[in-house]
Figure 1: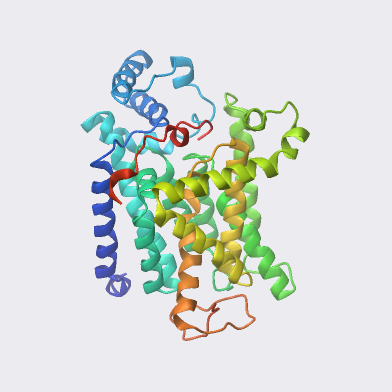
Figure 2: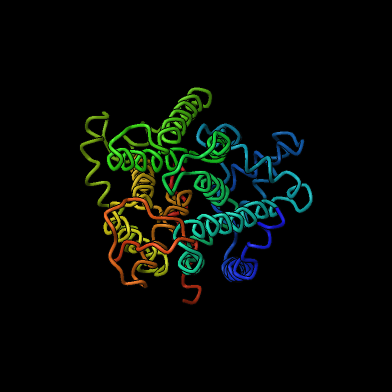
Length: 399
């Protein structure tokens, strides 16, 4: 333990957290940490503190009014099926809400985002290398949209930290991991399931990584097989159970509404058009209000294409496909909000791309990159104008 602590890059970690702290202050100094979904999490947290439903409702209503939003009736506020399973964030926020009132709900997301950044730095240090990973993290921190979603009273940062923890358990180097690593990954996935509906993102990443390893090694039972199998099983089973136990929201109904159709077949026929609308709308908004985020996404796309033989690209592709599944069935442009839980895969893939570009070297055919400590050849190849005011993004349904 002491030896690991001595090897940890404390100065670099302090630099990352320091930059993150400045970004948080800069972002929330000019805009509230409130988003429409905050209403539901605040209501759940107040109930967990011991207040009655009527008392909780009045406190939420008074808090929300200052931001110009209406509060849904008690039946929706305390019973919306989409939000009802998301108990982790409200439960963790109880002591802070008891101490500071509803504004205390920002404590957990801000801390979780910092943890997510540090765990992502650790994943990158073990894979693409520390320098490249930190460079990408600074690009991430420069995005006001990502900092807002990560530090506001929302579940995004918690899911990001948990998925980063899952990524830390994965066999990036192609070597088999212990059963303990698998169990930890499954435990974190269960926490993700009760934080927000994002379990398919790490599961999809693991499945595509397994397919890539199976093709490369010409056998099915690779180091990725247990993670792909069990993460997928748990993700699907939990989401099905949640839809049964919390029936107040139907993703199919939302999909039909988004596509303006009456049947699943007609809705599926509208997927290409809907996908194009979401992509073009998000790119336009990023180019308008968040250039760092646009650069990060463009680099991730390049990494997925250029490094298609490598495990980091496989993980990225799997995470992106799952993200699009969530985003398309919701049907609303969100400026990468649905992709937030999978940020660890974006960061590491872009870090590998930058490392390869700086080294200016070509890659071997191998699809597995060695750990960062080995010297092996790798694959080559403004003001606060940003505002929460674009309510089209933050008031979307099905978040």
